[in-house]
Image 1 (tube, helix red, strand yellow):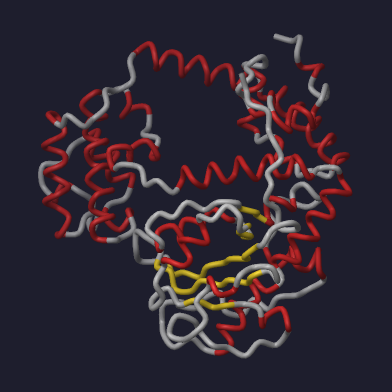
Image 2 (cartoon, rainbow, N blue to C red; image 1 turned 60 degrees about the vertical axis):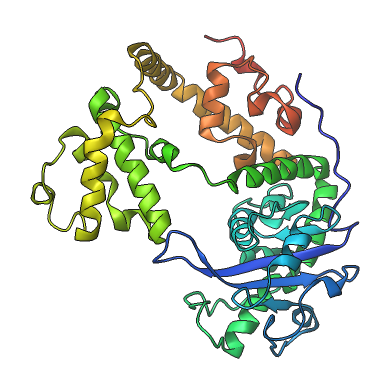
Length: 394
């Protein structure tokens, strides 16, 4: 039985809130390097819970009353403990714009804090007649008539000192975020979508929580979607997995981007036609410091107990059948998405929030499955009969 959604107690218009953003550098490392945390408390938030003095925070010269409420925290100097307590406090609403990435950076800084009571303004916009993928600058312009100057997008936020211009730029990203959230809630009330908004927000919070758990290296191959020739050759499939595990471990241990270790296509080619020496690889495909690990992984693949078996012939046949079924319903899925878009427009909801093409395809193939997103929760309520004409066709 699918549980009935219950309206959460915590909302930015009824509870203390903290608007949050992060600035980071993520160009030459596996993990993002957090350089700045911006926080703006609501009037009823206990400011004593936030650090307030250098070197934990950066003093800056605000140019508006809203900017003056912002606290710029230096994660290179400040203990993460106060922020961890705030993030995990369900009584404090944490307001983000596009929460996923910020939550990941904050969780890593705070030793895997679980972020509770999330309110994502980008997601909320999608229930107010706006796009659920709009930028913060576009959102503030649309909801509050405030224009942000995007002048510091290439800043190295881990370099010290930060300039006054950089600090003011950072403060602006949280200064008006709560005001925007309150305006979005007013618009959601006008559209009658507040409950839907919070139902989706709860799902997003659960997804964020799950994403904060780093998957084991043994699962690294699953995100690469190895091509069919690899998946139908047992030995090649083992070699591909072994190389993916080795690359993931190496990237994490050395804090380097995965593709700086070795590119995906090199792993695929090596899995299918294993090289015997570094000279058998394309020029500069593998740095000398990685060669030993690469060839050890190839040689050890045959006896590595961590590796999953390749798909069985039956599994591959079912995949082919599923792919063929998806092709057969492609035009009907397009028609269903058009119906969804028209219904979404009347509701003031971004159609992308109701269904992706993949969601609509899975529904078309298994319309009675109660676990599918279109058959449960607010999406089922929003569509209420709109797709009935698709229900009796094979």
